[in-house]
Length: 170
Image (tube, rainbow, N blue to C red; front, side, top):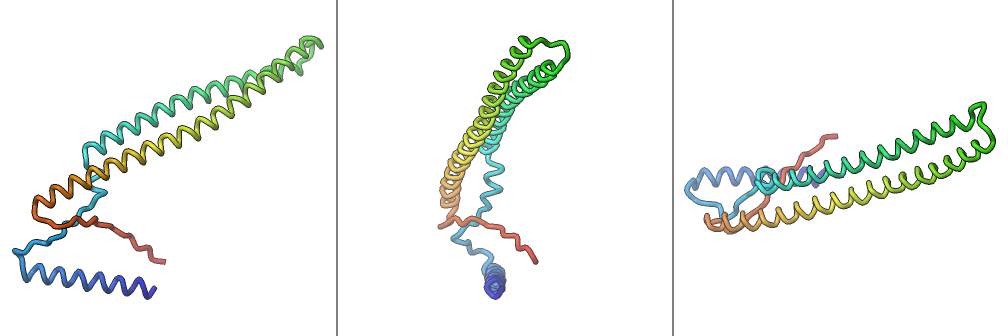
């Protein structure tokens, strides 16, 4: 708590100094440019294109998932129907054995589909996460270089990112 208060006091005094010095010398330029990279990133056209690409990737993954889940539901429904037929009156022993073999085969198929769905979900989530991270890192590097070049051309010696902190009160 004391550390937070000392930081808050330091920030307030720094802000007061900056405001007073800016009024004293309105013509002077700061050698440091402050950039809010989140806003720059959000409004960068390549970031918007990347978001569209990532959303299309998510949509394709969703379509594949729906196909797998539909196949699984069909196997489950067939299992349910086969189980109902096994317990029906009037079913002979030979037919009942045949139905049980079909049930066993469908159970194996259902278990296999369930495993495929689980693996699909894990691999696609990892694939999307890796792609997202790679795209964003590349774009942030590109944005950083463009900002440095642009701002240095305007006379700034350094670029400092603006970080907004939200303080939760407890």
